[in-house]
Length: 416
Image 1: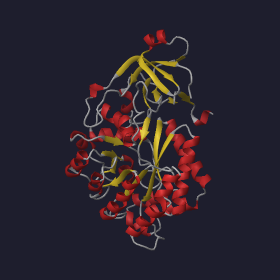
Image 2: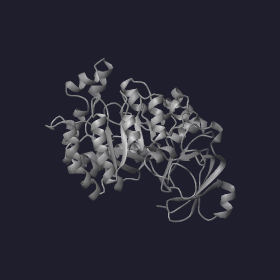
Image 3: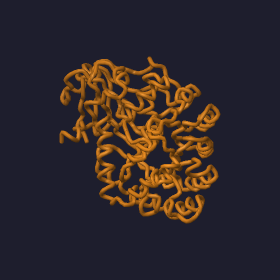
Image 4: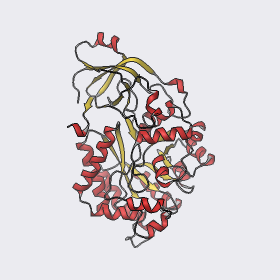
């Protein structure tokens, strides 16, 4: 971590993302863009953002000079992933594109249960190694904070193993990993009781362990016809709230109902929302629930996108995340997905950038990142261009050339 005060720059443009509303649509021309800007960091925090030349007169001793034309943005934040898993589901993808349905694939040994089986077989070290590689890829592409869910263990030992792997990789990696317990992903095939009995078993045997071992402060549940009912979810989340967990919900991916539960419990976010309409959106917005679009799942499944434009226009806080997982969303490219989703939904540059920076931070209850301003984390990324509009124009093909985490310039993995 940087211990001395350092001025970094000059950057042709610094897009701060400062001063923008946390909810609702944004004006394209409301982006704060500092021309010929510089950023002052100390002890992993931002001290000052402003004109580089003016800053160099105040901080003349320690200057990290940037050669060439670069645009600076806050580090990206992926608020919904499943990057802790074992194995691959390439066979599922090929079958789905050949016309097989989700249920047909699951009934023939594929689907989530296939990943559960492979994740259970993987050792803790294997899970850590694979997840570390995925996290490193994210960091190289500008994602400096990433949420990671369990949910491919679905028995006590395997769920604990996944959450321990997430905690371990977070402690060793430069990227920040935020863990979420998704033990309520589906009812495991080898659990003999009902869906409600499985959730009760999880509550009684896992929740206190999570608290005692600081493995996660967040609980998620998949509410869908193929997963858990709204009634089951209501009972489960009632206990989660009593334990003091933050709540997020896989909601309205194929059918509605989950968004209503998310609103009822004041969840931080309702994620997916592909099946949601104005009625569901209004309930979420009234309850101050963030709507997280997962375009990677829509791409992988060939399904419609969440109506992001509508959600914003109604006053919602829209976040875009990858849903990086081995089944429906194996790509894991946040910038590309945000660019494509933004074009399809007619989101302007400010709205798209907001959805993967400070609004995404809000979905993780983090108020110290996603924006370039004093006291924020010194997480930022630089693109080799003179004009910030080029970034989305290239639809994700333009990646950051330089990534700083806690004020330190991160060298890409292949150059180490």
